[in-house]
Image (cartoon, rainbow, N blue to C red; front, side, top):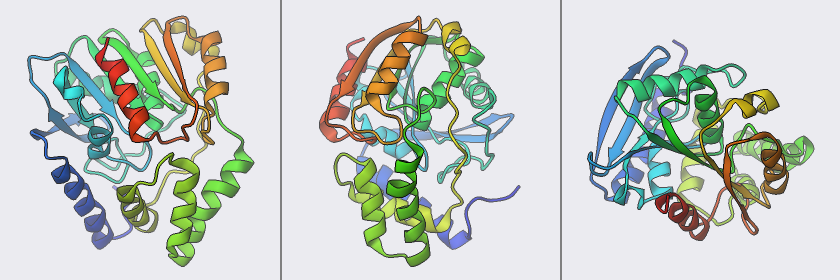
Length: 285
């Protein structure tokens, strides 16, 4: 199988940062590898096994430790399964799934079956939101409730703004390796400066072949087929998936939309205060 890591040394640099982040979290956790028809999937498990299950799904160019850092207290109420999404710069298989079909949904439901979980809560950010919606479309019978933060797959932002403010700085960093371009990229997407994101993405941009496939949007028919309760959190200053536009469409197309929140000052990636708010929303259910 083709590797999306451009070199073994680059892969090591990225995974060393992965391990460092998980170590810094200082949590009681364990790894589990699940075999799926799409490839081996790495999962970090934390929390008491007697608690109800919650699967946390990170965004593009991310990894499970980032999801655990984003929502650190969910394990007080849930047994948390933080999944390394396939073909991302992490420890899962490098099978690149299509966002256009239901592969992501099948993959997640295979994980749920392999873990023998029932009544699962799903929480996802960005690409993680797309994966969760694909899961519901594929088979929502084992899903209790979902929480989507700035998710992909409902609306898209202005492609010209994304080109000039996000993709060109990224390409300029790859070409020049000048830190100012990573800073510019992150400033457009992150509400608050994140030192780990600077380190991690600097390595990912150089040493990993990212997926630049245009993100599709869910059809009205697919959205109307979903019966699982959905809580949707949009970010008003999100260039990728604008929050106001997202909530407006969601209210029209999702019959199971339970609750919506618009983070007035948030860009695509939330700050600590907004993440604590999202955590409390999940924990209060």
